[in-house]
Image (cartoon, rainbow, N blue to C red; front, side, top):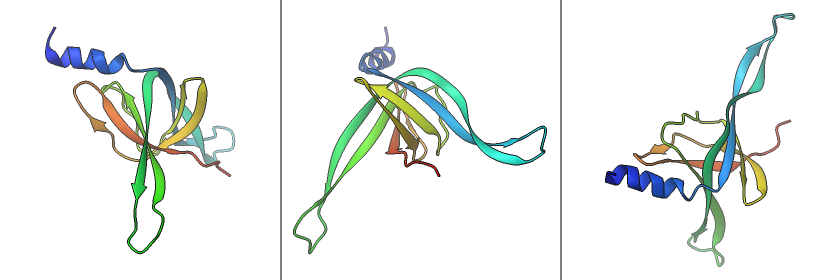
Length: 122
């Protein structure tokens, strides 16, 4: 087995979650001829892994550092997820909705997508 396949197998062995992906698309109602937006299912039950990283950002002149969290999704490199997609991830018995914040970093063995916790849509 070549090193690329071995690395991919090692990364995929860490996948402990599954994700479902929706794209927010324009949809035209055939009856009313009106155009609206809907979340359209594009991928379901895809193995993945969420990673959470604390980021401490000290701002000069402030006595306390701001703390934020980076959320990263790891999944197979062949999957295409458009920026702005809604991604529902279940991992370790917890399900949450996220939005993808940009273009993924794609490697031979996996891809990484920075996520943001989705705010409720009005």
